[in-house]
Length: 220
Image 1 (cartoon, helix red, strand yellow):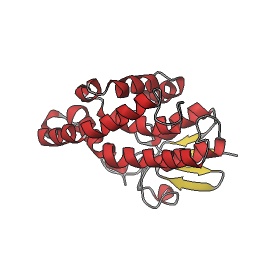
Image 2 (cartoon, rainbow, N blue to C red):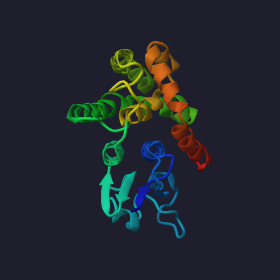
Image 3 (cartoon, rainbow, N blue to C red):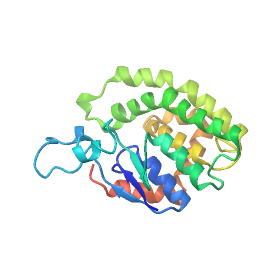
């Protein structure tokens, strides 16, 4: 039985690597890189990337991550995590059908309510060179995120510091890996102290630290 994760650490594959670490399952990682990061993806000797024919056979959408779990191929990082948690069970997985519904709800919530704005904060406050940063995009993100942050803050207060079930689960990983993108905007976290404490606790976990160390060792 072999789990293969396709995707470099500097991608949404971090979500799957972190969960695999938490579950204690072994996996092979194929470091597929985003084609847009390469000056010439078609150059001889270019690393495997999202438009490489061999990867498009795995995921014809041309996006990372994907997994091959002993012949079962699945795309989309949040769905991958929900699948892996259910397959391997234990406290990280939903315990019943109601928690399965909550896990799906929170994954969709984080992706639709937060991810685009949070990514824009990463890009336009930290990642992009100064000449490429757009203050208007930052302002729009800062206007949009306080409301969902307040929703999450309340859920954490009511859930004992966790998003679902009063315990650390796959839901915390899926949501934390999206909320992490907003870290360059400290004011959002100062206004949502439960979110701030929860994200710090998530990032203190050995499973996250191992994933992050691998990410930091990877070429930017």
